[in-house]
Length: 127
Image (cartoon, rainbow, N blue to C red; front, side):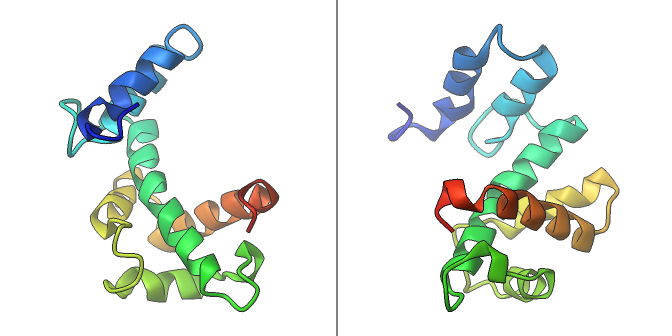
């Protein structure tokens, strides 16, 4: 639905979810694509969504270079190294991941939370 217009991404998602989630979540969804959208993330959930969106790409890419292509093989230390390697998973914005600093948690903790979260749904992701 938004293939040719990234600016509509959050707006259309918001329209689909209106009435199913509260306004704070709708605003976070609108703002998560803040490079294209007019709203900027201002809440913790909005900031977390921005950072998590890019982080998920880094985590999936990290799993795909592992011997068995499994998220269970990925460790926080390797995420740290891959974050610092700008040639790895170029589509995963380090700037957007770094916005997690605004949450007041150490970056290593953010990496750990994100990694554990995707590992919990690895079977759904096929990784």
